Image 1 (tube, one colour):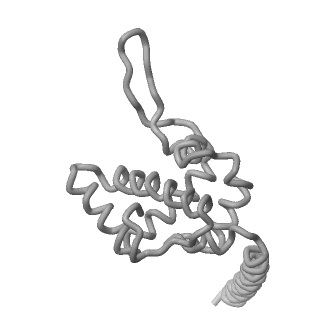
Image 2 (cartoon, rainbow, N blue to C red):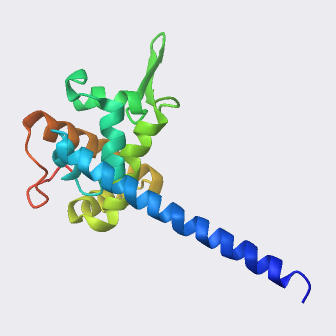
Image 3 (tube, one colour):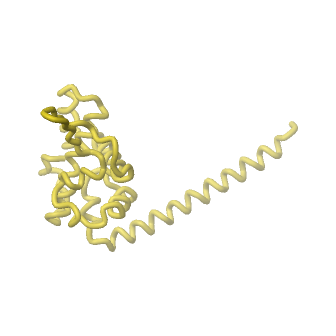
Length: 169
């Protein structure tokens, strides 16, 4: 057929590029593993269920030092996961934040989403929020917000997450 050889050549080239990209990703993952092993907070952050190598690296890059955040609330605020007080005169209420560091928000949201299926404690919390009438997205955000407090406590106390005794996750 006309063009069959050209199509096969293109597919072969694309497959070679995909395999090369996979090898580069593996090399980057190994490098990140070495860097996290050398970081004093690397193992502590990774002890939280759902926090893998990439998300832990991103968290440490964004936060730099937990000393910047005296409480879990202070850590949640820049990510846009903490409610914002809206007030005018005598009226005041809390609303969802529209701003914040999107990278930091993703670092908290994505492992919370994964933990719903992997971590029994997170699953119980998620199920409780769903039974309270929250949507899936609202329940995952509530879980992410709760896990920020847990992560802050892990880094403050220098104790890794213990899934059996963690009632806050």
